[in-house]
Each structure stands twice: as structure tokens, then as C-alpha cells.
Figure 1 (cartoon, rainbow, N blue to C red):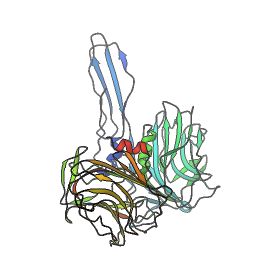
Figure 2 (cartoon, one colour; figure 1 turned 30 degrees about the vertical axis):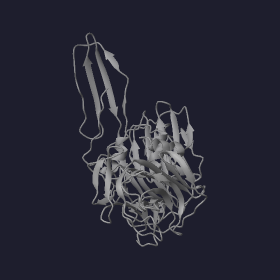
Figure 3 (cartoon, one colour; figure 1 turned 45 degrees about the vertical axis):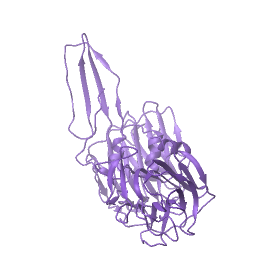
Length: 492
């Protein structure tokens, strides 16, 4: 079996997150008795590659076929292009892009979304080439922000239709009765979760051809599942985003749609949860140590840092001065983000050279001042020789949690989770250390900056020294990680 890589002349770093997780699945071997023959077939150089390799044996020729999955990804960052450069679309009746500086709309502080007005019959369409989802597994993902919702209104999200009156030849994903709903035309599945208006949701639909299952996900969690379902059988038809056709009726979306991803394989529940909840992932690996390897491209910048051997591959080294730091912008669900009291988690490997009252991770609002920042993680020391992990409060200057002592020049894995109900929970090297009671945050109406190594004076925080040492494998989530999640991250 061959490992075949997708390639694209239009692939951006931002979208490699989706590309890397496309599995290379094989079709069963076919043995044929024929004369000695070796051949290779290949389509043009884009993401749609199909290889057939026939290998000679003594008396038979074994044909092994490996099909690479077809994918498309529309960011809607002021563009109608597919990020892979194949399935480019066009706007119908002029839907607009959200302002790039809008603070109260996006779910992530980068790029834009498409705004659809149902009264104007607006949509986005990909007419050619045809994206074939018939008789195969596939996954559809998107972020949606419906406004408004009523039980009698149907809002079309994604559709492809060959025959609107033929069984299994018309695919539509929509909001119906304020719930997620998918149908192949007489082969449907209705969700169980009721949507709220003016709220961002990550939605996903998975059809597994092998198991004949339809699965709906909301915010990374399985909402409902149906077995023994026939496959989608449409062999032509344009892709529509923001509208769907049901029989003779077209249903239009009202609100925002962003980051629509489509692939011809059944993504796992683990992948769907990661797509919905991973806000950013910084591996700090060469050759691009400040690149966000997560789905949303919140790329950072660094000043006077170096890439060295780390806990996993490479790490970033900080010099312990105001001129040596890492910064990333666009976090909406961390302290000083735009969303009030939403859950989040941070996981990171640290290897400090100094433990003398230093800041590890600080969150600052766009209006940078000592009153608009928080030392989220730091190291507190009473003698400059030994130090303890602290989770700091921005309002009182006191620590919410004081963790264990850390050893200089030694790697330690730190994970911090938060929810309004459970407060903060601190894990060290994968082990639960302690937690607080319920804690609430107020919205700052701005996206947050994340700093490592900067050492900004936040209120009366004692942990404001410049970080000196190594940092590796920073993960940021918009959910409260479980013990098993933390254990996995602490044991790479």
C-alpha cells in the first residue's frame, strides 16, 4: 500500500491542520492472472490523487488501489476561493463579509465570515467541478451563527441536489424546528439540541459508508446518530452554502457562516471534537516556530527567541528580558476575551532557568494597561531560589491557586482548565493538583493578547518577572479538558 500525500498550489499554512489529518485509506486487493505488467495511473497534480500499482509475482499480478480523500475548505476570509484551489465558488445576490475588526461577532479573532440575509435570497455556490459524495463516506463541518430562530423557520446551511423529488439524490443540511437536520431526501436525521439565537456553534455531519451511519455533532459532541441508512446517491449538482432546496422550496440562511470544511471520509469523534474546540496549537518547531498549527491560523510573533531541542521536537528559548517574548492575538474565550465566563483550557511544557517571581503566560486586552491584564500562569518565589506555580487573579492581586514547587532546568507539564461552574483546575505532569470554587469573568469586549516571557506588571502581581528558559507544545482550547485529555497531553 502506498502513502500518497495531497498537494496544492494554493495551500496555506493555516489549512495544513485539516490536510494533515486526512487519512490514507486503502481499498481491498484485487488479484488478476495476466502477463507481467507494472503500471501507475495518476490524475493532475492537485488534492485528488488516485494511484493504482500492479506488482508482479511468480504466477499472478496483485493490484493495490489507494484512494486519497477529496477535500475542500472555504474560509470566507474576504474570498470565495477553496483553500485547496479546486472548488472555488461565487456569491449569489451579494452576501457580505463580516468586518475584520468586529469584536462581538467572530468566534476567533482572525479573518471574516459570510453574512447571509434570507430576505435577499443570498447564498454561495460552487458550480464546477462537481464534488462527488455519492456512495462514499464524507464529513461536512462549519461554524454557524443563526439570527434569529423560530420553530417554524427552516434555515438552509449546506446543500447539493441532483433531483429534488428522487430518493437519496438531494442532500441538505439545515436548521429545522430550531435543531440541526440532515436529509438525503427520504433518508433523514433530526438533532436533539435546540439552538439559541445569536450564538456561534460548530456543527458537523458525518456519513460513514462502511457502517451506514448518519451522525450529527454540535460543538464537537455527538448530538444524534442513525444506523442502517442508505448512502447519498447524487451524481451531479452544485454545492450551495447558505441555502438548501427541499422539493420545490429553497430555504435560505439568516446569520453568519464560516470555515466550511468538506472531505470524503468519515472523521472520527476525536477529530470533530478537536476541530470544534482547539483554538490554537503552537509546537514551536522549525522552520516556522511561531505558526499556529491549529485550525484558525492565530499565528504569533516572537522577539529575541531561539529554537532549540525541546520536550517534543523543538522548543522556544527565552532570554529573561523585556526584549525576549512570544505574542499571539485573537483569543475570545480566555480572560479579557469578548465572551463572558466561557470555558477554556491551556496546556504547556515549561523548563525555567529562573524561578524568581516570573510570569509564564499573561493575557492582555487590546487596550494594554496594568488594569487590563492577568498573569494567568506564573512562578512565585519568596527567596529567589525556589518557586511554586501560581494561577493568578487580576482583580485582587492574589493567587487563585498555588501549585507545587518547580525544579529549575527540568521539564514540567502544566495544564490549567476553567469553567464558571468549576473554577480553575490545575494539573502538573498530568496529575490533578487542586481546584478553586466557582469563578466568573466579565467580558472586556475585545480580543485578548497572549504573551509568554513579556513580564508585564498586572495589578499588584508579584509574578511579573521576565521568563527565562524553554517553552514547548502550547495548546489552547475553548472547553474544559478532562483528566484523560490532560493525561494524553502530558504523555506525548
